[in-house]
Length: 340
Figure 1 (cartoon, rainbow, N blue to C red):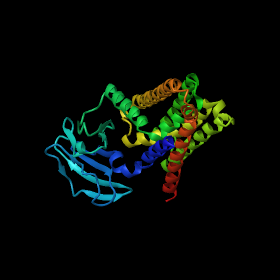
Figure 2: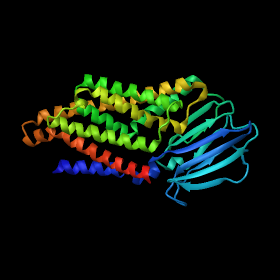
Figure 3: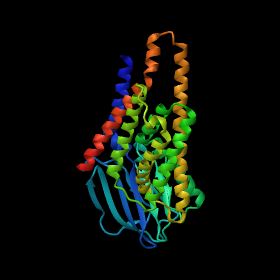
Figure 4: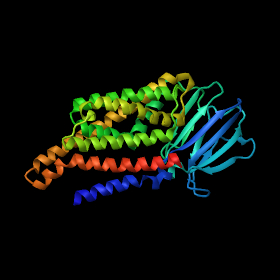
């Protein structure tokens, strides 16, 4: 009974994620240069309605002035502020910061677009609340920025991680896991590039709902395999991973669209974002396989206890049901949003 209590507690924490959305969802700051001295500013942060927004504010360099009054609106769980600002000589070489960010648990994605089309991206956090507007970031800086974004996106993308976890549990053998994860990476790299470059456009709501459905289906396959009903997923997991990877790539593209691509270094940004995603996946898979090995070692020491033996034997089914319940919740939630 205790193991079911732990399972339900974990599921409760996962299902409670929307309740802490104001702290977990990142903010977004965009500075688009329109003349050498003027910029269009967009600041978007989580909010639950007028007066219930995160208490974080943009601090611009001294000498920056508003051109006209700010335009403020609330909608879709966000506070949106639009301004036109001007500073003699522009913002290049000067610091922009977010006051109050250090007292939160959220991040702020930053995108600076210059007249020539070059794009600077930053990720501010409670430990890094400011950045310096640069002239044109070099290839090395672009690579480092997008590598970090790729790693962070996969490690904080709970739906993608649950899908990978379900594949690892289903496949078991580490060699087949390596092939399966590689197929998943190749597939999402294709659709990520196609979507971010504008060759394909798929609306985000149905993509997010279908990603949740893909997790449910793999969770069901784990249970079927346990009951001696192996299917195509169990026999050819790399093929299923590749197919669903194409779908997950559109989800990655949605995240990348929030920060944009630097026009002068698009291939570098795409390549290193994908490399970052792959590194994050490998770290996660290594952690899962290490945990399974450790559990087996502990279970072998306690195998004389029939309760421990039965619990370990049913562990994959318990995890599969947990994954399925969480993914089913996401499916319903995202479907309701899609039709709302």
